[in-house]
Image (cartoon, rainbow, N blue to C red):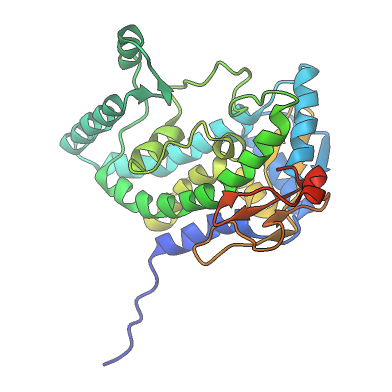
Length: 325
C-alpha cells in the first residue's frame, strides 16, 4: 500500500500560526511591524503615525498608555484594529452567505440569536433584571448569522488558539493586572474611546468567535482578552481564507503583519505604542506556562512571571521587587 499523501488539515497550520505569535521569543521585527502599522492606519483612512515607541515589556507599554489616556489622547484601537478586522471578516464571509439558500440563512439566524438569548447576553453585556433583558433582546447582533459550515471549520482553530489564552496569556496578563491595579484601574478592553462602550451590536468578529466556541469559558472580560484581543479574530479570518478559499481583501494585512512580527500594540492619533516579545518563555508538555526553578516568562527589562502548570506562583522573596507578578 502506498503511503498516504493526504496533507495535514489546514486548521492545524492556522492554529500553529496564531499560537506561535504569542509563544515565540524571537526579537520583534521593528521595520516590518512599523510598516504594517502604517498600512493599518491607511486602511482605516487615518493619517499615519509620526512616532513609534518600542517598550521593552507589556508593563512599560501599559504605563505609557496610561499617561496618554491621562493626557486626553483617545486610543484608536477600535478604528485602526477592530473596524478593519471586522471589514476583512465580512469580506471573507460574504461568498459563503451568498451561496447559502434562504432556508439555510433563516435557520442559521434562528439558532444564532437563540444561542445568545439562551446564554443570557448580547454583545457580551450580561443583564441582571427583566428590563435590561428585554432591552437587549430588542437590539440583537446585526451581523449575518454563522452557517453550520463556518462554525465547523472555525471551532477546531479557535479552540486550539484559545488554549494559548487559557494557559499562557491568562496567567501572564493576570500577573500584569495585579501589578498595575494598585496604581490605576485598566480600561476595559481599550477598544472604544471610553470604558462604557462595551456593547457594539455591529461587532461581527465578537459574535462569530463567541458563537463558534460555545463550550469555552467566556474570556471577554479576562485581562488577557482585554489587552491582546486580536488573536482569535485574526485566526478566524485566516480560516476563511485558507479553508474556504475566500478573499478577506487587503484590509486585514496590516494588523496581521503587526501581530506576526511584534508583541501587543496600541495605536493613538500620532503615536503607536509597541511592545517587545519576551526573551524567555517556557512551557510544560501540555503547553502551559511553566518553569520549575525560575521565571516561566521574562522580558528584556527584567519583568518576569513565575508559573507552574499554567498557574501563577510567587517568586522567591528576594526576586519579588522585579517580578511584576
